[in-house]
Image 1: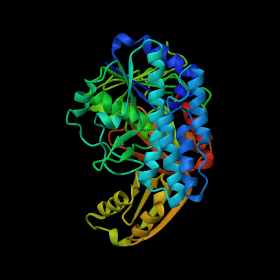
Image 2 (image 1 turned 180 degrees about the vertical axis):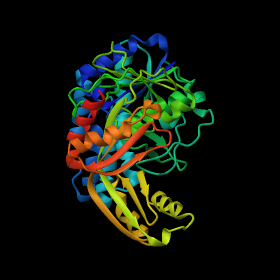
Image 3 (image 1 turned 60 degrees about the vertical axis):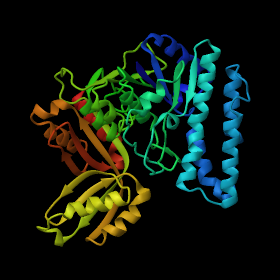
Image 4 (image 1 turned 135 degrees about the vertical axis):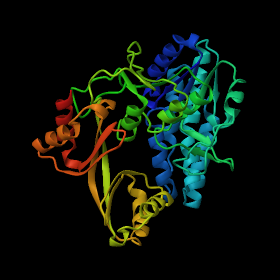
Length: 435
């Protein structure tokens, strides 16, 4: 059995949905289970409505028209999604009446993207003669905590496999969605459908988890930034985890973790080039000899500096800092310390004010926006001398100022913080040097 996850761009038009059907049909002998995102652009539109509805702007007609055009283009009944679209419209009217969109209500609104796409895709598959069933992930046991917007999955006790065994035909599962202990629908964070696919792959002991996108696998750099970026045929879980977390656009950062637990290969494929073998992520693989596999970046990073002379020789100081970060939902990327100061990076500006307010109780805090994180990734870095020196000298020659540098003890990556304005130059220079 394989998991096949299809993202929004793979489901954005009637033609692309027809292409997805052909891809699945050609792999029907592998016993596929599908995980799908909302159609391209729908989640963004719903998020915008969640922002504007409390102020009275609650026009859902564009989303309704979009889905009905898709249905018509596939010769499906145009009223197929009337129940879901009606519930969505009722919810939005309620948001305008109370002039509020709580995180719980926002997640409920966002859920209609995936709930509509699963039903549309399943209907088209059945129309084409392939038995399929739309399944809401939370109905078969994907449970999460109540952290709306970035919910974390709760342990599976076998309920998912038991419930999935009762599904007839090809299951078409909602990505991105779960349910908390109180019965509320939750979301796993943007691009969380990849995470859903990995969670189902783990629960069902899949032989492979396939992430179908609009690119030929994982690349050595963002091809929108580096024209000479190349496809990476094979990489390790460790490398893929670093790439995903530090700015790789193809995989959700959490995708790798459930797969790692059971050593399930994760393969990234292109719906527009289905014959390409893509990139396969394995627990271990034979190294190619090249120490660096990719150069990735993450934009809009904030540097947070904490100066606190009392931290000198004080046990547990870092624990206090990270405890405050956890309380306010701030994910810290890199950390550099001295005897009296700590420098951290974070990318979620919405939670930084409250985080820094409490951090001020420990010392003087300054926040510097306008930075980016560059990460040079490759498990060959562990046993190749001088990679850090090459990175720094290449950036120095390009006139790029490095604010923070970090290399983990496992030496899978070298992370650097630079000014946002230098990203294009830095990534291209490093890619040219190593590839």
